[in-house]
Length: 103
Image (tube, rainbow, N blue to C red; front, side):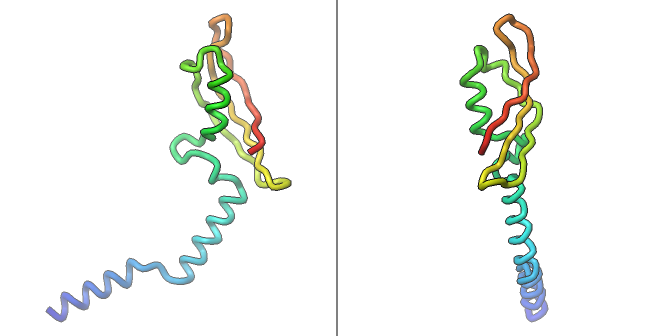
C-alpha cells in the first residue's frame, strides 16, 4: 500500500510542469502572438475572417479552395495577412489569386 501511494505521488509530481517550464511556455505563447500565429487556424493555417470575406465576394463561393496563408509580425499594432486561394471566375475558368488583409 505504501509503495502504491509513493508511485501515485511520484506520478502526480511528474505530471505537474515546473515553474521554469511554465515560464518558457508563456514566453513561447507571447512570441507566437507577436508573430501572429494566434490569428491562423491550427487546422489549415487560414484566417476565418479573410476566408469568409473572400467567399462573400466570389460569384461561386463553393469553388473556393485555400492554398496557403502567410502572416507578418506586428507592425503599428496590426498584422498583414496574405492568402493565396483558387476559385472559379465569371467565365468558368479557375483562377489562383492572392488576397491581402490587415488584421
